[in-house]
Length: 209
Image 1: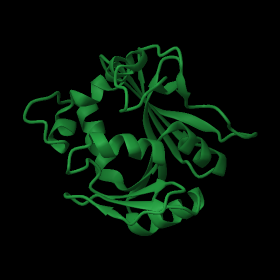
Image 2: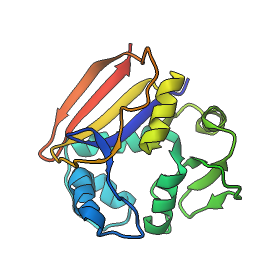
Image 3: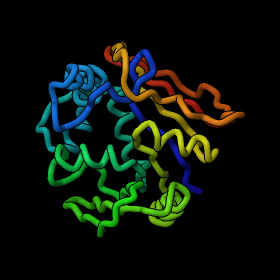
Image 4: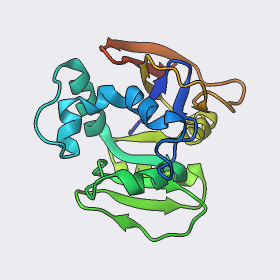
């Protein structure tokens, strides 16, 4: 049975994205520099660089192995429309998922097929339907909830998230989109499964109790 997991980066003060993060104005409140500080650990990994065709080089070791494992275990991804809109204008032609991706949206749109195995499907029937479709396409592999924060919150409130993988970076945003807001009571209970130290982030893995 495939598992549902969240895999995201998080600032030290609890934000998934800095305030004003939009491709329309990359310089607004310095969000680009903040985002770079949050995700710099990932961009330097060899596997990530290979996956996005950034060229040779990059770091190897336990963090790189973790990134590889996350990609290899993922059979389908789910994301929100805001995350998709920003990615649509910034991802390379060969989008870095290589699986079906289900986008939660009110917009009617035909599937968008990209080179390398990524197809974006636009789901208008809510998070439960997106998860149902993701399960069908993932097979024995797992389902990644990619973001943004509101989408992660919806799946936490549905009680279907079995694992949380958080890369906690030592950067303070001071504002933006918080991860742990709008959660119902009682919330899901997790236990610490793994802590992996890196020079630019601490990688925390929690599993559902």
